[in-house]
Length: 151
Image (cartoon, rainbow, N blue to C red; front, top):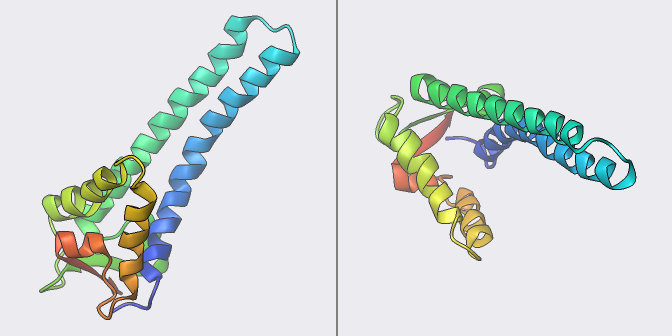
């Protein structure tokens, strides 16, 4: 088994990459609003570049998500899990689970549940706190019948 929290660190390292790609586009839109208020720029010039940055940010974030999914399906590791030295395997063996377990059950079900209004923080927190169980499996691991092992 893994040390307490290694899976969370692997997830957070991967999420940080997504955040670094997505945030510049939001910052560009915010800055364009400020520039429009305080200076007399041409509106078309103000909105052209932030919109372009937003598209580039979304394309990069989508590409990184696709790369992460491919890595998870082939090796059981996202970029963050690879850096930390852990990988996702099935409960009963050390083979990499398939598409249904890794993408649908382990990823999309928690995202869908976290999308419930006024309950997202509670659901995310409950999923995360499961790491303190004896078997160190979060709720999404229990749903998908997976576990995280140290390599």
